[in-house]
Length: 100
Image (cartoon, rainbow, N blue to C red; front, side):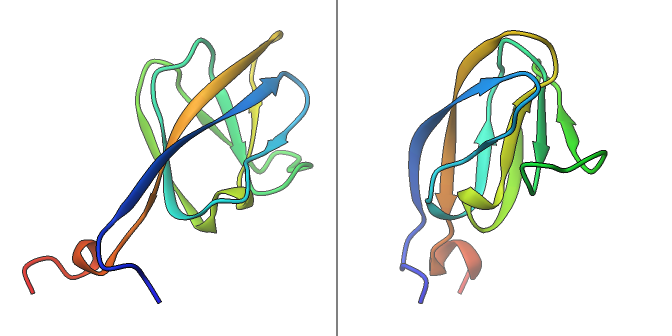
């Protein structure tokens, strides 16, 4: 059952280009990635082929997780490595039924 109020938290993940990193096991409905040092590829597996979305590094993005952050995999578009922080949100009943 969902909590009464929304829960939020912060986590980070280390990324390198050419390899996908699975996000940690965090029950949540969405993650938000802020401005980063490089564009990021978002996928639902470690070997997505061409099935990924590129997140522009100059914009904040909120991405649905399907129930857990570990359903998402991230990789850098360009060479190098970096650690990115993200915010996670688990929607509570007040977030799902606003105005009730």
